[in-house]
Length: 223
Ligand SMILES: [Mg+2]
Image 1 (spheres, rainbow, N blue to C red):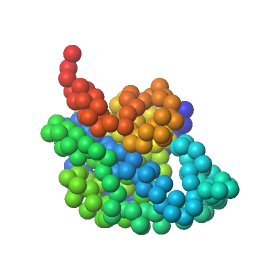
Image 2 (image 1 turned 60 degrees about the vertical axis):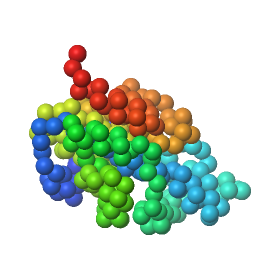
Image 3 (image 1 turned 120 degrees about the vertical axis):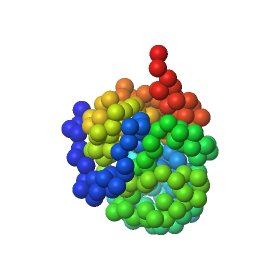
């Protein structure tokens, strides 16, 4: 089990701007959960004669040439990701049903979007895109594992807290920092979701917003 990670000062400053209420809280990731990312990244890579070597949750070592299948180095991966985000952030497609599901849940839940963007890169673009799609919730940018930020967001609230994210790393981190949270691993892409094993700290593994909304609604139904 990893140690809980501390929340970064720049993330804590953003968290302090979110009002603390008595409502239960949903903390939701953006890429591959609310907005498609894998399919866009695949298009970007294909246009450069690159491919995912496996449908596996890893970027470094998992992107290579279409014909030689040689993995490109970590610096190249980082460079491509920054270029990719610059090209795509303003036009990523929404995962079907995300707007309606979150809209219905927002009657009873506070909703905060917690997204990893290098250095808060493209945050205004992302906020504008989401708001334009009917997803007007506060956007907080983080970097690295999300456990510390999730625990800080949950502090002083009565609970329950639901955490929705595609990344196995983030779920391990949240499980260490806030084990009481309800953890939903949402992966929009079928191929990547099917490559993931449901771990014991995951309450629901899904790629479907209707199922997610029903699962979360049930949490508030007492026995
Ligand atoms: Mg994500």
